[in-house]
Image 1: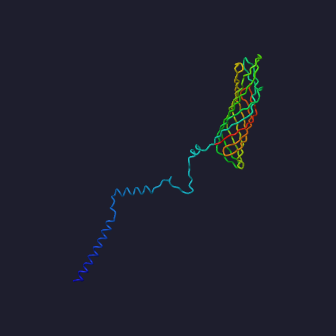
Image 2: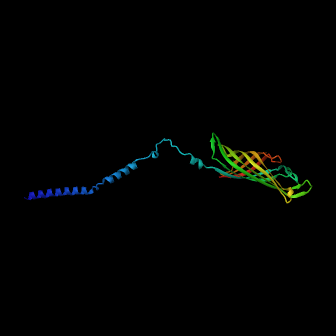
Image 3: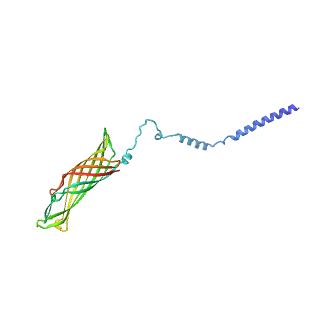
Length: 258
């Protein structure tokens, strides 16, 4: 009887342990999802898994880009310079009632000038670097002069002012092994104005004419931004037979580039 009771107790404990394990495993399972929740979960997984053709990055694949942003934002270099030259007025200015004024009788004068421009980034062909750009130039001089009218009247307070304006394309060439020196070529179109002022109205006049020129120069870099340059210009008047313009001009200057 004692052994029978022991066996019954043992079987009861084993069955109780198995039932407890089954209940714990049942509690640990997640609650079953509804059909709607399962469909939403599957759609999210598929959306993450899909990739578009633009997202694919294959080594060696040729990619086409729109060149317009690069062209618009391409870096340009700007420059400003101060120049100086010796200038000789030439020609004859005629005024009705006063006669003719020989401008060549005036002495040579000092003409300071200013130039502004823009240059492209270098274009390399073999060992030569090319730069294309535009520039504008202006110069002004003023000198006192004495005049004698046809009537013999002397005027001592006259002043002759000369103004030059020009502009045009610019080409610079550099050798790759000597980038501190640049050769510049610049065809220009511009105008020259001779204006004489005086307290006597008979001694006043203003004469203007257009001109064409071709300039050749050398630019010597002193650093990243500063440079010195020399330039020789040949100028020819276009539409005036009265006044004249000094044909050959030599200029010196300095400029900064940024």
